[in-house]
Each structure stands twice: as C-alpha cells, then as structure tokens.
Image (cartoon, rainbow, N blue to C red; front, side):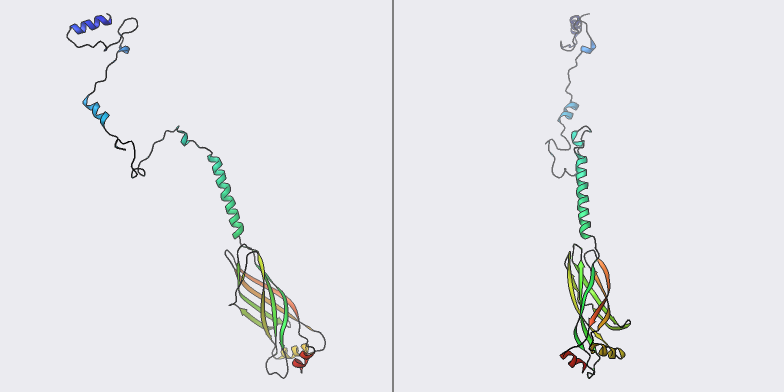
Amino acid sequence: MTCSDLQFKMFTSGEEFPSDRYQTSPNGVVNSSYMSFPYEDTEESHLIRTKKCPTCGGSGRLTSEQENDLVALIPVRDRRLKPRRTVLYLMIAILLCSTLASVTIALLFPRDVTFTLLGTIPVNITIKQSNATTPFIVIQNTLEVKNPNFFEVSLSALNQQVTWDEHYVVADVSFGNQSVVIPRRSSKKVLRNVTTFYEGVEGSKVRKVCCSFFSYNMLLVIDSTATASGLTLSQSLSNREYKFVDCVQSGDKWWDNCV
C-alpha cells in the first residue's frame, strides 16, 4: 500500500488526515521513522512557556540584594577555572614575603649594646689635714656606649662602684634618674663625676701618697653597671676597668692641700 492509497482510505473513512502527517521514504513505502507529529499547543505547555524566571523575574538582570545570596554554577571545563600562572604568582608572593620577613628580622633583631670606660681623671682633690672634713677626690669617668642596633637605645640605672687599696670601697654612686638615649647605629660618650671618700686609716694613706714629692698613681677598680632598653632589646650591662689616677700635688696645689 502506498502513501497515497493510505491517505485516501483514511480520508474516505471520515478521519481528518492532513497530507503532511506522514512522510514516505524514497522508495514510496511508509516508514515510521519518517513520521512527523506537529506540536500541539496545550494549556499546560502555554503556561510553561509563559512562566517567568523566579531568579530575575523575567528581566534578565539581578538586583543588588541578590548578588550576595545567589551562587553561579560554572561548567567544569570553563577556562576561568583553569589555573593561569598560579605557580608563578605563588612563587612571587612567597619571595616577597620571605624578603619582607628577612628585612624585618634584620632590622628588629636585638644586638648587644656595649659600654667601656675610656678614662678617669681627677677634677677636685681635697685632702688638707687642717680641714676637719673627710678627705675626698672627685674623679670624672668617661664612658663610651655603642649601639649597633637599627633602633635607638636608652641607657638607664647606671651605677658605679670605686674600690681602692684592693678592698676599700671609696664610692658607690647610682645615676638611676639620669637616662641617656643612644641613636641607632652609633656611639655616645657619657661623662659622670664620682666623689671618692677616704676615712680613717685610708685618709692618712691618701694624704701621704698625694702629698709626697714623688709621682704616685692610685690604682682604682671601677665597676659599672647599667640597663639598656630599646624596641626589641632589654639588656643588663656590666664593665670592670682598672684605672690609675695621679693625685700628687705640686706648686700652689701642694701648698693649699698638703700644708
């Protein structure tokens, strides 16, 4: 049966059979694979086609309130998900962080502050026998403080003890209320006057030594302690020096102090 006979038979039986309902194969035989069924517009399909998008409301755009609430789904093969120079950026970030950390550690790393006693000179000698007061000698100590840090350091709680004749302490002075600021990567000289007192037997000895006609140097042991503090530094300093002090009087000084 050909396609035309089938159409005629179904049409004569009273059924509506549009000519475009079926298609024939090239050899004129009806084949189901060549059948085409037209789309029927039902009420349900019309509602599906006319229903608005619940996300954007049919406008095709999102509101600013929805930007923080909605999640965009991106295909796995999207090229935006593929790493592009990620390793290079990661290596640059690691290099920059390492360099910054190294520089910061180098600048803030605490280095030891040192101070030494450069010299000691007498600035006032009072040993006259007729004077009822205890003989004393005022000496001036010159300290040099070196700060190798990249930040300034404050020197405080300076204390100096002076010993004469091996065990006799002639001075123990604290300069706790006098702090000194040493700039970064620099050194500074600090001058301090210390009064040494000689009582009893030691007073007689110092008069005999300083009023002789021969040059005589008094050996003084000077112990210095202090505290250095800075940005990342807190250090206790100590120093011991042996210094000779010439107390011999001559000329008018001998006449004023020894007679």
